[in-house]
Structures are given as structure tokens and as C-alpha cells.
Image 1 (cartoon, rainbow, N blue to C red):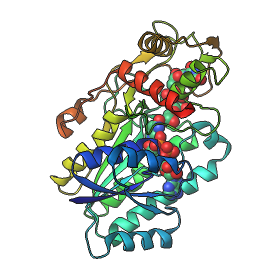
Image 2: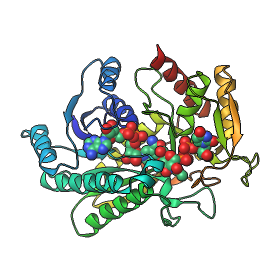
Image 3: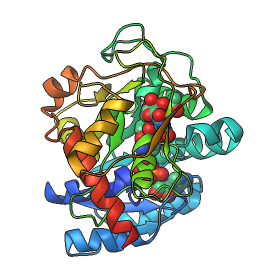
Image 4: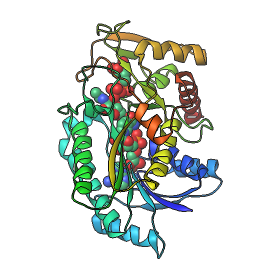
Length: 340
Ligand code: NAD
Ligand code: UD1
């Protein structure tokens, strides 16, 4: 079995990827400091997998602790790949606490690359974001779209980390790297055992929407209806987290057949949906109304973006199996299971 270290493996996307790795015959090792994950996620993973995955509690910014964890993990065996999810991800918070984001996200990436070098791991998958494109001039965006000046420290950490990985490969080190640029991951495992666990008031649309629908929050504020889009609300590319998780397996499989490389891939559905379309799709799928009001625009939001996914389809042999309704149904199922 191929062994894969998954940093941030207790987080939202990481935990779903653990399931898909196991389903595809990989042996994943979770490496997380639980700074943005609850330990309950491990019980959720156990309920789905019927065994407890190997977990190393470690902070990736602590290089010596990280190397010790790698020593324990290897213990004479090879590590076939690393998927590096561990990072802070709240855009708004990053503008208030930039150093927190620069030190965590960038130091973690440098340290994990050092660990790859020290422990001879050649296959490396990095969690990037469509935020690297800013507001592109044409949509859908493909990977040749220029990366724009970042709007937030969070976005800048993704650009810097992509550059660090690219430079490491250019330096001649035989790394095989896939930079995965996620669009908007939503939804949850259909079992209801794992999902997104935002701490405090959610900033992102779907967790806020489901909590508002469950009457746990004030009505949803639609951030602006005067954008240059058909209904005036922003358009995004919402991808089911399980499809995203499967893309990581596809990326690892692809890396296995490559020489030294560093390639970026867009991971989205290729379909854009407006905020109002998402709300109506949720109501149609679940039969539950979403209390809402139209509010002002949110600073920093772009009008519209969605992915051209042809490269991932062509190179990785991957495409989405779930649609928006599936993702909203699973997000609602997860929301209900968290209040039981
Ligand atoms: P998450 O916060 O749920 O998961 C991140 C995990 O990393 C958490 O479990 C956290 O405890 C852990 N972590 C953070 N810093 C760490 C450190 N120094 N050492 C060890 N563990 C650490 O976030 P997510 O939504 O699962 O996102 C995963 C990755 O995908 C992140 O890199 C994020 O920037 C990127 N991403 C997410 C989205 C999104 O909408 N969720 C979009 C684009 C990119
Ligand atoms: C944001 C980040 C992106 C990051 C992602 C995951 C920005 C500009 N982008 O994406 O870099 O990778 O989160 O953390 O911050 N909306 C509402 N009401 C709400 C919440 C959201 O109308 O209460 C709207 C937003 O205006 C947006 C859409 O819903 O049009 C999606 O918002 P959100 O889920 O926050 O994701 P992004 O802003 O696309």
C-alpha cells in the first residue's frame, strides 16, 4: 500500500480526502495540530472507515517536531507522497492578522518541503486556491490565466507557496508537484459523519446558509445584488468536497507516472452559480426556506469566476460526479447531524 502523509488531514477537505485515499488503496497518515479541527472528526473518520487512521499531532511550523513525526512515520518504510493542506484559510482574519498567516502558511510549506527532501518523498500535492487569479478578465479561467496581485494576505500566501514549490523544483530537486487550485468546495460526506466545522460565525456562504436555514443564525445577507451578472449577485464555481477529495487521489496517481514536474490544475465543476441560484437550489432540494435579505457588497468580493477544468480532465482523468443539488443536500444533512 502506498503511504501518504496528509498535513491538515483532520480539516474539512483533508478529512474527506482521507476517506477517498483509503477507498483507492492508499494508506494515509494524518498530521495535524488541531488548530482548526475538532478531535471529533477522528470519530467521524472511524465511523466511516471502520478503523482509526494513524494520526500524528504536530505543528508543521515546528521543524524539529515535524521531522520527529516523519521519523516515527517512516520507521524503515518509505513515504510515497505528501498532500499539504495545513494552513489558515480565513480571508478576513488574514487582513487583520497578516503575520499569523505568513508565519503559519509559509513556514509550514517550507518545513514540509524540507521534510520531503530529508525523507526522500518525491510526490507532493499542494492546496492552492482560485484566489490566485483575482478577478480574471475572461471566464472561465484556465491555468494559463495570469496570477494577479493578491487581495489578501491569505491569497498572497497561496501565491508565495506556489512560487516556493516551483522554485524548489527549478533548483533541480527531483520533486513531482501538483498545485491544485480549488474553486469553492462545499457539501459533506453523505453519511453525515464528517463535514465542515466552522468555528464561530461562518464567513462562507454555504455554512452560513445552512445555519440560517436551521434558524441558528440571523437571516442570510446576500452580499450585493448590483453586480454585472444576470441576477446581480456574485457567481462562483461550487464543487462537492468529495469530488475535490477524489481529485487529490487522481493527482497522486498522475504524479506516479511523471518525471520531475510542477503543474497547476484548476479544480471546479466548470459551472458558475449565483448566490440567488444557490439559495433557490437549496430550497428546492431540501424543501427548507432560507431566511435572507439583500445587503451591501462585501469588500474584496469579485463579481464572477468559474473554472475551465479541461486540463484536470485531460491530464488527471478526473471530473466531477456530483452536482450543486447533491452538495447542498449533503451540506444540509451534515448541518442537521451537528445539532442532534
Ligand atoms: P481547515 O481549516 O478545515 O483544514 C486545515 C487543517 O490544517 C486544520 O485541521 C488545521 O488544524 C490544520 N493546520 C493548520 N495549521 C497547521 C499547522 N501549522 N500544523 C498542522 N496542522 C495545521 O481548511 P480546509 O477548508 O480543509 O482547507 C484545506 C486547505 O485548502 C488549506 O490550505 C486552504 O487554504 C485550502 N483551500 C481551502 C478552500 C476552502 O474553501 N475551504 C478553498 C481554497 C483553498
Ligand atoms: C472566499 C475567499 C477565497 C477562499 C474561500 C474559502 C474571498 C474574496 N475569497 O471565497 O479566497 O479560498 O473563501 O475560504 O474572500 N456570500 C453572501 N453572503 C454570505 C457569505 C457569502 O452573499 O453570508 C456570497 C459572497 O459574496 C460570494 C459567495 O457568496 O459571492 C461565496 O462566498 P464565500 O463562500 O465566502 O467564498 P468566496 O468569497 O468565493
